[in-house]
Image (cartoon, rainbow, N blue to C red; front, side):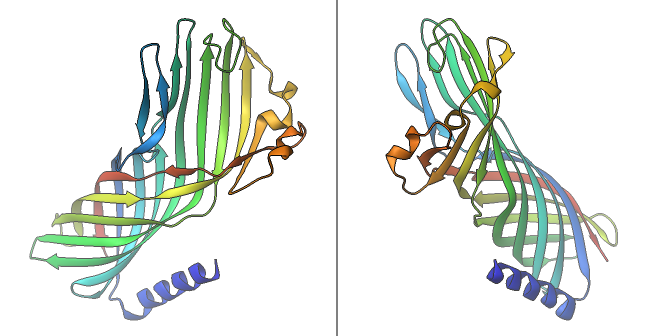
Amino acid sequence: MYKFSFCIALLLGAFSTFSQGPTISALVGCGFSAPTDVLGIQVEPEKTTNIYGTLGAGMNYGLSSFYLLKPNFGMELGFTYFVGSKTLTSRVQNDFGVYEIFQNSNQFRLTPSLILQHSGEKLCFYFKPGLVLPLSNVSFSDETETGSGTIAPIGQTVSAQSETKYFFAVGYSASIGGSVQLAKKLSLFGEMNGISLKILTKSKTMTSYVYNGIEDIDNLKTVDKITTYDDQFDTVVNNDENASKKALSLKHNFSAIFLNIGLKYRF
């Protein structure tokens, strides 16, 4: 954390000392899962297959400020809010019913980048390598059982909701794009942005458990509601029903390719 704070302070100091004035930008973008990982399995009466994808698909909303230190080189500090799409991570289908888990994530992200650009009279093309630092990263799971006998007796229905928290992580970002000048200080830009981000799970907490239409979470034991993740654990600890369940850490994939569009205003 000290190194991270020092880098941010150095970056801001460079902005204020060497730049000729900021350009602010606002963007909105749509992201698609890439590159994909195995998220879970799908079990059907005839076959069992892997489910591929990432938790990185969704919408991105961002604000940033960048400064040119030289005509073709600058630095950018951005903040984005990622709203993930619901993604299927597990499914079991049999003659009695269906069991499914859908997962999505919301994240505030800090995105420092370098800017390499070539500017013409009206057009500008640029490349931005940088980092992705999730400041708040939680994912939400919706688990439903309609009589398949996976987590409830055959013929019974269950729906559960959970929140998963993650350890701090650093990802990588690269964008390539171009802008066209609309007015003296206003430009329209479009870009393709690739993000590589994988994050270790920290804990998972069940927030709702509805059994046959009745909320029943208060009657569950702690070991059934809370899971904590680590690289190793003593298997006997899971015998304590009043303590959280222990499990091995998982690395969730939030990688994606975004198509962004936005406006830039130069002061």
